[in-house]
Image (cartoon, rainbow, N blue to C red; front, side):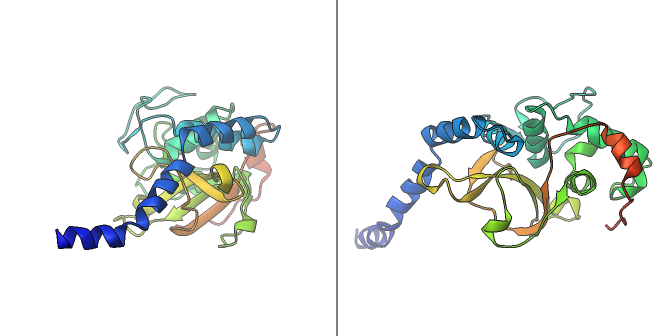
Length: 237
């Protein structure tokens, strides 16, 4: 009984903090955040709203290979990884990263990371790989500072991280979307990401080593045509 009493004494200050954290990311605060973001005419805020709506779905983390439709192909709704959250969020706004990445890789395959011993593009999986999305965003979006200053990040930005585990480079890569914090913390920069437990709304922007920081959208004109006129970047793995 004494041990239990001591444990409760030391844990008691932590319990309200944990309860507060859960309450902040509540359904009510999520609905308010989504409504506020959707009321904006800015693509980036609409993207953040789409990402937050993804947290309403239960998703089993599944990095498996699937034969999917094209364009507009997707895994079963209840399956996915971090990249699928990005693809689904953009697709909710009419931007099909599956098609865009496949078209650019078909025209410029050697400009993309050569990490999977493939001889050509694969429309089933290429858009589901973080290094490929990084390369695409670097070619057609804005490449931004990888700082630890919140002022450098805006709602709707895409961030990639290098995780402290993974046997291969791509296995340790992760991706998410910057969104506002909940409730009274709406001025903060949180992220929506799927690191294994499904899409989550969390205060984890700086919890991992930032690998890339991008701003992408809206789409105007042909991305394939744009690739023809854009200077080819140096490929680095």
